[in-house]
Image 1 (tube, rainbow, N blue to C red):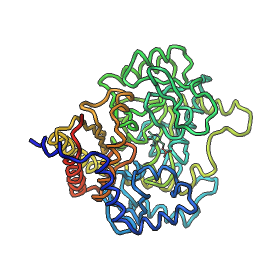
Image 2: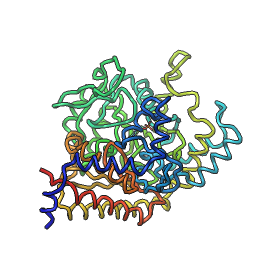
Image 3: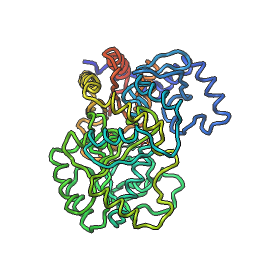
Image 4: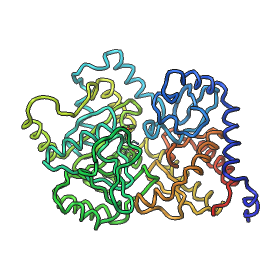
Length: 455
Ligand code: PMP
């Protein structure tokens, strides 16, 4: 029994101080370059989120290949973050690298389409089962545009989302439930409109709440991940989606599946795997294997209604699209990704490794007697600080422990393992090997052995 060593364990702050010093000592070159960057980059990084890793200064990388990231000081880390999904098929996959190199020499952007566009449309229709597609430069933009199209197509003003959701920087959906009431997410900067006027938020896995929200007949679309993946992880309860799908259809509301993260389930995404039959679908991040791009598709019916809305509107700015949307490079990257990476054969080892990882995590958690759980969603695993998988966003959020999370993440970095900041997400790519999984489990084991016993 390992109770007594834990009783003597140092408190979290002491462990954190030790790990911070370890990080500083191991990365002198990163530290120097981070200082240099801080002179002219706000927050010292090109995107302020890059500060959120919890490291004493931002880790500076030299290169990323396959399942590994090499930093400026030469440490090679097993990467389970994979760019928070953008590199789900591994860093620098050769087929995409050569497609990008080939296309870059033939022009990056012309506001005109080449052959790749038609081919990508065919592949997307075949993979995801929706016939009509458009493109954006990020999943955030794709979600924004889908909402706009569907409001225009339906003539309805409202969007419905699930509490705890994240769909990118889509202002409309930054609304949470606090004690059952909708509240604009206080972290959202510079927003002056009351988003609650046109956004309805309900708990996931709650059919009566969904019924009540749809009853007014004013909801254009439900924007949903098939499983919540951004507040820890929340899987749909058995029977939830078939019943919810039916209600959404009956309300004349469009169902949008945001597959940006749930693409981890398989090459057709999670909606396909569970027979969700959405009216629209968004996929970003990994769909271009790291080249910025995203795609969104519609059923024939909704595509028709959206096109009719456009044709009925006066000529001019639609508020949909950006100059580089659907550019030649992005289309080349998506074609190479769809043709060489979104295949059962590529997914097979990712899924096998993630299963081994989930089992390993469960074993470790049990051995340390911790009241935590592990949820697997295809190539993605999440461990959460609660004994059973949460049923909705509120329960998932309540299980979060930022101080503990920060310690675990930093201690993993110090043992040459990266996992996604913000929560405990681990993703396996085709190049993730047994040795990477073993390294992660061994590193986590040493940290868990030192943790103060939970109250
Ligand atoms: N949808 C989902 C489900 C996401 O998790 C994210 C980002 N984490 C996005 C959309 C937005 O992606 P991006 O930041 O690449 O625009």
